[in-house]
Amino acid sequence: MDGQEQYRTGIVTVRSSWRRQYLLALTPAVLLLILLSRRIWDVDIFWQLKLGELILAHHGPIRAEPFSALHVGEPLPGFAWLGQAAMAAVRHMGGWSALRVFDALCWLGGFWAPAAACRARGAPLRAVMLGLGLAFVAALPTASIRPQSFAALCFGFLLALLRLRLTPWTTLAIGAPLLLLWQNLHPSVTVGVAALAVYSAPGWYQWLRYRAAAPPLAATALALIGCAAVFTTPDGLSILAEATRNARSSMMIGASEWLPLWIPANHLNAAPILTVALFGCWLLWRRGARADAAELAVALLLLALTVTAYRFVLFWAVAMVPVLVRAAASDASDRGERLPRGAIAVPVLLVAALGPFLLPTRFEPSIPLAAIERLKREHVRGTIYGDFPFGGAIIDGGYPDWRVAYDGRYYRYSSDEWKYNGGIENGFVPLVDVLSKWRPAAFVLNAEHNAPLAGQLASSRQWRCIYAREGIVVYVPKRS
View 1 (cartoon, helix red, strand yellow):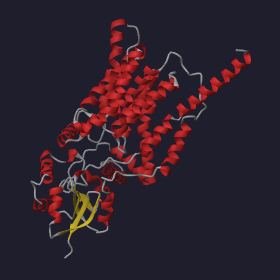
View 2 (spheres, helix red, strand yellow):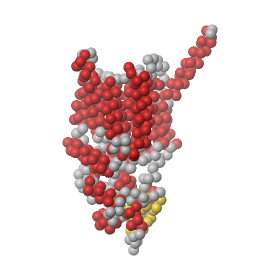
View 3 (cartoon, rainbow, N blue to C red):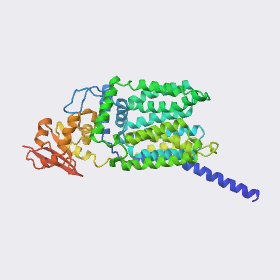
View 4 (tube, rainbow, N blue to C red):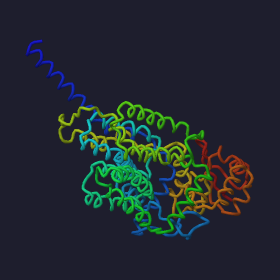
């Protein structure tokens, strides 16, 4: 091969490399587009947004129950109060479209933060995007608008902070307020505390045994700060009892995100987790030297938690980003192949700006928004009895004129109340008892899930059906 041919081959190789780099740089924008294409399915976001509106109007947390008919005025835990207020403010300014983009950027930001930190430390772009994409797939089933997106973002920033290996004082100066903010945006900073403790363990072992490196003082100090941050919410010390009650109620009611992966309801969710975990194991076996003991320990802890309760999958997926990036990185670095400034950010911003127009807001048909709009035209006031997953949409659609019998806040209702709800759904509690207990102004029911009650309403002379579509029925009193 003569010199001219070698020159041409070199040009082709460089161009091909740049094309690959640009395509890889589009990965975050593509992931954001995927998030924006999904329907809104989380039924609890509706009451959270309404509560956020009240928090904004009150200029602080709401301490008394406003929504549940039989509990009005009772003490109200301040779970995620700051996250609820932030999301309500975004919806107020830009509607559901703005909120979708905001939430998706927060959710994806939790994954991108450790990925960007890996890139800043010299990881090849192809390894960074592979790790980002695989972790994204593992947690995608959980993606919907909810304050948990703030938890993912804060946890991602915490892992990024550890990965950057800044000076201890800088790490503390950034990490301490991050933990305080996290607990008020979403009360899950205990996950960060556990991760920090496990992250510190290999470093302390190395230091105590070999004195070969500095001890992980910053991570340890942040773990202690995180323990204190748990109580820096309006609930103070009572947050532990409230969180325990919420967990017990959630498991009793059978919420799948609180249950292990091996139950039938979580089999589909387990598939991407198993796939990513096995692929990560294969990468680590192939490139075992690339594993970092501290990062791997965090990922293993969160995997164990995810297996026992699916709700931890988002944290595990974020923790897998640095593990997968290290494992996928080759010995050669492509740090010298710098992309132009904005090669990643500009496509993301374009998707954020144009995505809501290309992909309008869609809700799961099981959320009774059309039924609620129809009910509004009846101008009823009082308690609306609905299936508990419908409670959030009823609250958002009609408060303060409407209150609910049940909603998705498992901690709000006692175990006896949930058993009573089960009795209604199974036909053991008749319509006459429901009328006596709540004196409802209307019913919004899933005709299949709540078949006994829906059947009694259909045969009653005192109630008339004003809506019946997609398995949802609405009943109001017959006019005299």
